Length: 262
Image 1 (cartoon, helix red, strand yellow):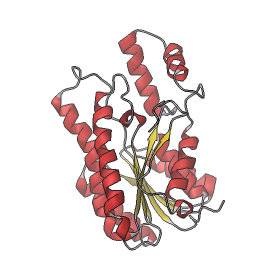
Image 2 (tube, one colour; image 1 turned 90 degrees about the horizontal axis):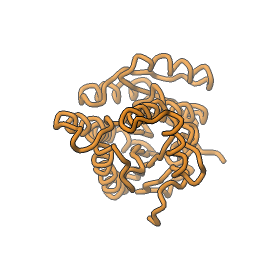
Image 3 (tube, helix red, strand yellow; image 1 turned 45 degrees about the horizontal axis):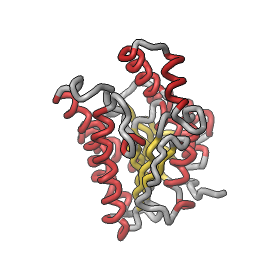
């Protein structure tokens, strides 16, 4: 299938590793012009790796998406480099693990800035350029915790629901501008973030890495966690013109771990 992504201009945030990196790489494989950003100094290495593997130039921007001025710089640099913007993927690192008693108000505020307001500010800043595109799409990256709360993840369980509300509402409001807005709800996908969550579980439960992985896999019908490239394949399709009639979709990529009907 031709995803019709050749020379489309894409910005993927939080793309130095994990799901963001895998998604950016797959866009480049499909011929898109890709900009990536992250706080980590790994961003330049990631861009070089993607460029070497795909033969496509990748714009690397080191930035903190909790800062509106940094978001403006990233969006404007992408547009200046490539001449526009067609696709925005609002990805961000997950907030700390913990229960309600564990998390203080400062951590709540930081998580809101990272996981909700970063998406709001990215979309607001990108909209004038997306409105000029003939194939505009926005993808928010959330979590299956919006369908079924995950133990010891009170921040993610709460704040990512707000991103779902934002996504669904924008899919209605921006349809008149021919801008599609969707979300992917990844389940357990083996990334650096999941390594951190497993470490937190080991500390909380007094178990081992092997035991925690086995416990996670036991609740997934496919009996394993996903791979970042499996997430990326779905993300790139959902953003592509090949999915031109998909709008307002909250798509679970979780190996069937959420047993709910809806």
